[in-house]
Image (cartoon, rainbow, N blue to C red; front, side, top):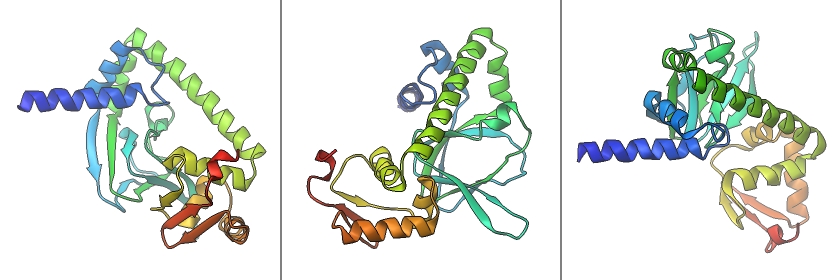
Length: 225
């Protein structure tokens, strides 16, 4: 039974990596190599994964939950960099560019992550076939980041908000929102004041209703586009 559980867990990890946006370009043999070094870790809400300036020991792949990345300035003010969702790969910078983490990461809810330890990743990168695959994947990631910047520049806050809902929760009539409006504002690339005005306008137009953590859209909203 233990062997069966191990095989099932390995198959699940492989499927997650294979179907993720970040690792989708890697060949099956190299996905298997990645699975060999992945360490699953379930983390409770409000757990610090790593601190800004801390030793960069691992990169992370988020399977379930959400993680906030932020920096703290000299006055102790927190600046949210991004809210990570399922399928996101982050802290990969410690595999290549620097020895410490450039931001702090905290779970916003109970989360399941896969850790990719730096030492084991460097061992894999000595394998030419894997290294070529990984470099091509990173080039693809760079294109995605460029597209994201363009997305933030060309879409207004309303479009980005509904894109966020669709991307994170799918097209639904009702949602249970597990993170604060401030964090959603950061995730869609705007400030809390602008986001608050947007929500007020959408409410007054009858496009949404938002009470506590329950958000509902007007009937047929997703069919209008």
